[in-house]
Image (cartoon, rainbow, N blue to C red; front, side):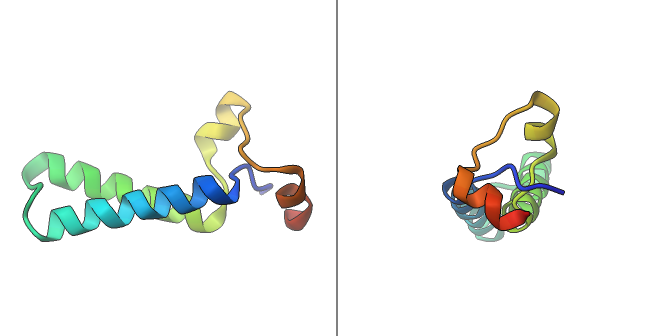
Length: 73
């Protein structure tokens, strides 16, 4: 799996996931919407840690710089 996410993209995803988790566990968001957002946050953390986004691959996108691509090879 080649990385297709740059460092900034990965950091932003993890921050968004952390914010959603805090909002869910403090009760600010709840119900079905809360569960859906929590699952989305988990996907964001997973893709952020791995550095690969299947949707980016599907659409032929990459936020990876040339330097980041060389690290994954």
